[in-house]
Figure 1 (cartoon, one colour):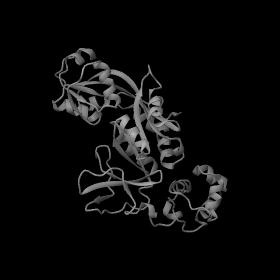
Figure 2 (cartoon, helix red, strand yellow):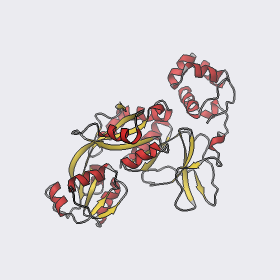
Figure 3 (cartoon, one colour):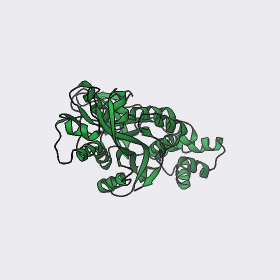
Figure 4 (cartoon, helix red, strand yellow):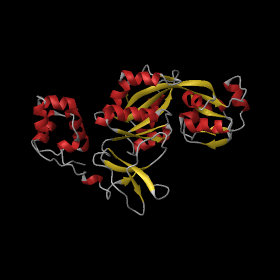
Length: 355
């Protein structure tokens, strides 16, 4: 996908005004100097990612550097559905993942407090504002605090984050299909610190990075009227569970506690849903994070500490949207914010591991 230049000298003019060399601009934008030279000379049409990087480095919008019309590849006729909406009319967001313009049915406004880009009905819909899809990062993750992360990301970077509420296995599958930029998973524990990397290698292979979001406490949630003296006491006497989907770390945790017993209950989506099911009274317990349990006003019995990592392709490490995420997680203010959440530990937030 490419963005036609308004003028072959637009980038050069702004660079000159800032008294930068081509090497200076290339370093700030994370691009080869030869690419900057070719773009300034009109010999190379920049990709959407390169255009965003140059605009961010020069402190202006893409529209100021390049043609204001939206790239042809993101028109309503060529945007693919990431998956088909269950019903129409359907509100949706648009994002460019890799080189693919994608349309996502709106999900979970609690995690995504951002306006939709259009409404699809009868085979037609509107178009996202120019540059909005290219400035959107799509994250698949079950972190109950992901909405807070999205709000801080937008405030700090000017980009937008869309959060899809998915367990680790489902999130990695979306990343494998090229439908999201980043996938969250939390299988690693102090006893088995390499399990997140093992899961990535088994599902995706090599060529990925793990970015530490936090460490958190995961355990059993119980209503105020449940008199459980210990985790095993609750496991032994719980008749009805709020279950997470197979393939999620929370379901794996419960299966380990139950050994060979088959749990009775319904599958719900996410840590917040587990806590809400117990709070509403139709389940006696389930596995979730301390944050989800405490915000629902429920008891929490810790089982294990897990490392929550965000996985992304190594080839996308210099994408401005990914760079903005890394910068946010490494900022002192965000680490302090994460550390204030019940059950979260931000000591290693922002660290990166190669897979």
